[in-house]
Image (cartoon, rainbow, N blue to C red; front, side, top):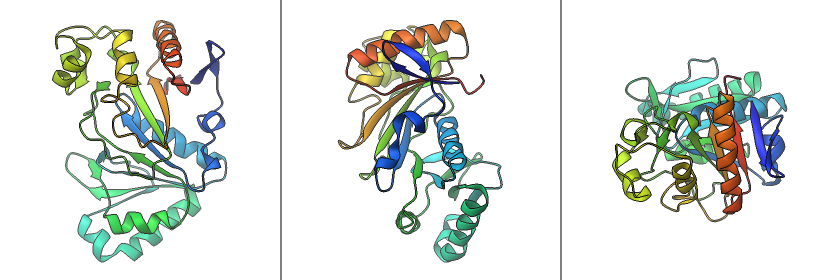
Length: 255
């Protein structure tokens, strides 16, 4: 389920791309930051491109859980350096066959990390959409960013928040909860409210941290898996809109 907020209400949307329309740029570079569904959002975007008959590459500038799919192209960092050309041919094969490729280097605990800069520069020459997970959150639904690795050429930033964080203790569900408490003026044991998510999404040291000036900023309120969460997400979306954020999605990848 994907809805976007417009005309003071949530409206069902066919896809992210039908609303955002990033292809007005020569080569979209879409980054996902935040917590509570970044990888799922990138997966959905990659699928949308594939359904449109277009190709997209998913990668990470930090760490991302490795995909166990036929289009996963993950290798040791040394292999990317020594066998880069052969691995890039494998990436091209995945793009032709599946319309997408997920690339990275092998890391610990089933995660992958960023490919060498030389490989990234080569991929950029292909002039196809790049979908990038730009920070980690340790599987928690909320976070305050440290230093998200947003590339200067980023055209769109999807800032993701898990609605399952509401009414939970900040220290239990927020990555870097002490920093979040300081930014929000709360105690770590305080519960998360709608106002907290609004402040995090709007704050220059929250969801907007590191966002390039030219990039379009988009908020995704994910895990709206129940009517109550959807209603509360609508309340948040309304406030975000009034604070100047015009692209807001409410999603549930279970519905």
